[in-house]
Image 1 (tube, rainbow, N blue to C red):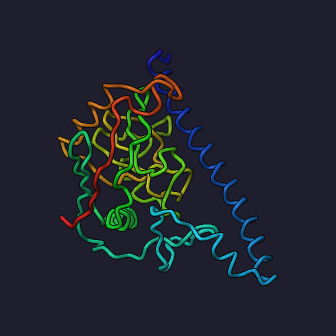
Image 2 (cartoon, rainbow, N blue to C red; image 1 turned 45 degrees about the vertical axis):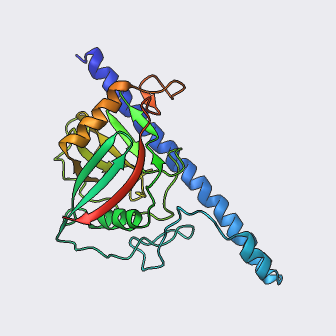
Image 3 (tube, rainbow, N blue to C red; image 1 turned 60 degrees about the horizontal axis):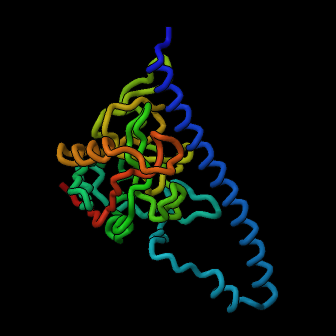
Length: 261
């Protein structure tokens, strides 16, 4: 017989998955809108308005750090290529984050997640994460602090996608289709298979989720204690639910760096 606690955790996981599905739906709609815009641009260029169109559609987002290198994986027509591989795939790296609540150090193994580590170094080297806020905290069913979106909405990203990696790194799924993401784990948020961008979540208490989110790092003891403190403070008023929303204790990523260990 399923206990009330087990049922509550199951409902929390289902809610988390529904939110991911809504993000994927919004992403698809955005692609459709971009396709329409691209078609319009072609018409304008054909009509001789190339100079005006080039200025009108030039972005000025300083957080856009996409690379012109060979894509991996092949991006959709509305996405830019992922950054060119520029790390040592056999090495270990450290993702250090200076926050307003203290320093968090995350150990990463490029041998297990080369695309993810390469992307994070690419973004960190360009200051992508600097000055951004962790926009989401969950305190019921799953226990994570989500960061990495410069927009602070849960819909932002670098303009390219990276593939899922190391999905079997946490073991085989149980009867309910989930695996345990242990406290201290750092994993990629996504909107579906192979849609990782810049958003990631920090697990501060063992959480059961489907093996669909790339586990790419592990926090140090001090970092875990910081996130635990944020989790204990709870969710700010006005969240999606009492256990899901912006953290009451706001967390800002002041400076992020990725270095070879």
